[in-house]
Length: 406
Image (cartoon, rainbow, N blue to C red; front, side):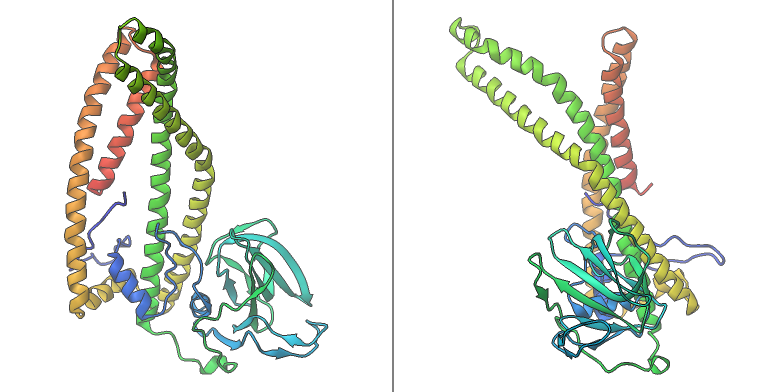
């Protein structure tokens, strides 16, 4: 369960204090992301994913260069050149950005090829988990073949005056991912309007929110992994006794020592325990890879925050001003004000209920731990059994502390 933290309005910070960015209600992040056309890229589970369409991809590149625009369409006709031996359709999109500017991956995947196009210009191909792929052309690579990348990661720099983005499906067919993206004339960089202060602040807020969610997902996965380890330990102790008793159940029923209902219940308990063991073992096998993926998402989000903060600081903006901007946005939008109020009330209710349940479970666990420590001193249980109970108690303490905001 996600840790729900109330965003405090009317926040005041002392002069010269470096403030730690605070979690913001999702409705505020979503509203500002939409208002300023920022690629929030959040899956239902909260993790960073890929651009929805061309417009979203361009918004992603505008974090690196605010003036990035689409200058060539999917069905544009191209004659022979140093890049192609045969005339034909472009089958991709050109996003204009200046030479040397960093550019980002639009979708997560694995770098499978880095191919020389011309001079210092290369094409970088990234294959996605669903088998589709994207090639980013006219670029200089900062990645290597086999490297895992996340949406938003810097892949390299522009080696000409744009990045050519071509997408293929799992069968190798070109995909027009244009969506609502518009093709604009090649820009004169010096004449482009500067990104607004509000957009810069909203970008920092969205980036920080993405980081917080990624960090929370990683923490939760580590806690769940430890809980599974303890559960597996208990099941592996329990199953041999259940199997042994099941072998004897038929004989006990015949002798009238137990009822048939009891025998069936024992059989059901054994089956349930075996299924649960298989499920937990599968989750445990997948957990290291899952944690590695989540760690990568955290690192990607850290990079996004760094870029957003740098852009803001170049405009003389601090996090305190971002917080003031959010407060003003909420105060000036009655619908948003009601949504935030409902969110905070719901968060408080859920937190209180969850905290009460966990504290009750922790009190019970603490009493059990005390009993086990006494039994261990008398030689009644093994050290491993004591450590399992102790570890479970520590996990509960961590969960309670997290919900209390400690």
